[in-house]
Length: 454
Image (cartoon, rainbow, N blue to C red; front, side, top):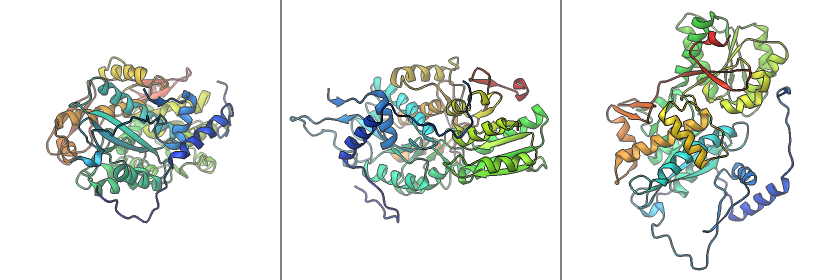
């Protein structure tokens, strides 16, 4: 087994007995609730199974599956061995193990939870048919709470302790920036991170990265273009999260404006994993912009929009796809009417797209508590992408085959209605950006022109 390289960061561990403690704590807390009140209120054969509501809470606390496997007196060793016993890490005769470090707690937890729902639904769907070349696909997850330091230690644990074949479905730019060096050094594929950051599109430097979605530069270009062409708006401001994610979106807006010889009207920022947006909101309001582009997660975005409307500051609000659309709509309530969100996957209830129909069926079957949405659809497409590449690699799967199959030559993968194209020095499959708007019914609606919603 390959030794973990020494890094000056200590990795915590969860003892087996801690699960019992966590479950006890959660059970003891059932029936209790809290309301932070950040935005203003609106008017609207061997497993011990935990109750569904408790299971969700424990998954958040531990960042992994909460089914407790029980040993039997006559249990025999697994004939397949551990992944490290085989020639390819994470691969045995009957399974392939994937790892996911993502946010399952904190203000971005809905993103990690829904990415996991989608990936697991895709894996369960193919496993029901016998897997990929006779191997079942498994996913182990760890909670990084959308913090870069935890993403490093989680990635180390998944690669060197769990022995995963690949990492999939990471959430966020700062976490990916921290985790990708770990994955690169180990030669581990880094599949479909939930971020459009430009550094991940450098296929020469990061040949192990496989992107699914369009970039933040493509999203922000579309935002600026449509504000000008559809609505005639030129006074544009930005609220961004003050880290590598927020700056990636902020720089994308600056570049889009620069191409048109324009400048930002105002800029504000907030600290990651907080909702401390009021000072930034007031600074932006003083400059009287006609539109505010928000590059952030759903809780601070909802706080910005809710408080702005509460004080009668009503510019056009546009959110980048990372925001987490379902969670944003829930947080906004009645304040959400007219809010735009750019998306990088098709509309999640449009069953006229074959892969979306398959996603809806898989989600209903394998994740019945999940509400269809853009994030879980992206997770499902990430899982389908992994499956498609594994099928192309054949029975003799390897990490080199996985990444090489996409980047050595022009390659098209049709996920049954959602086309991905890769090639030499091109590790991003989709360039598509879609538009949605929240209406009075509290739901997103697809649009082709921003004027449609005015």
